[in-house]
Length: 245
Image 1 (spheres, rainbow, N blue to C red):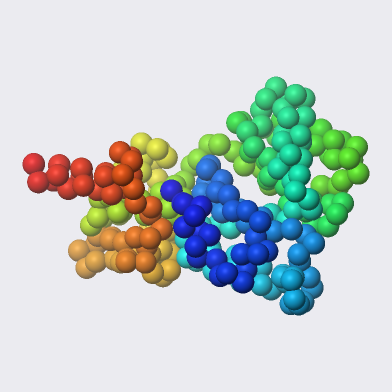
Image 2 (image 1 turned 135 degrees about the vertical axis):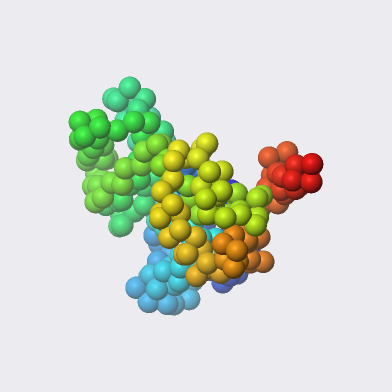
């Protein structure tokens, strides 16, 4: 799993003053970087950041942690309160079908949204979107885009793949797929091979001549260590002891 403090440590000091918060969406390990709208300028100038700088930060963090990064633009210190109000309002109208709601402002009146739901059908999504538009309009706001997220997690994140490799390395593709199956169901080997190839090109894993995969030194930093019984280091030690027996 990703670590919030570790991510903050890899953001350059000159950029940190513009990032008011960093969160990790537990469902898919997406990194959320919160930046105030009033700190964004069309070009670089003192006390402001630019869209180009934001894109550079996003690219750097995404490559460093092999994760999706979303920029969340806020307009006030009450941003999280507004998200909660919208989530609660929609759940009251839709039998508590929603799990989470994240918004990012395009300007003072329009915003983009990510809505996580327990289950989704075309009819339920249409109903939630209609209710959402009505609630926003009553607040003088307008929805530009809505990205729907289902809790059904068909494929593992890159962090999940790296974690299993760290515990079981060296590990061939077939065994890696088998280790992931209890949490994600049957995984297509072609999809997993493509994911491993991307991790290899991003210097996260090494492919060995015998067909096995191991983590690079750089990738070890993206899989947090710790003393918790479920930490990857503890599980790695247990896996090695089982091999000896």
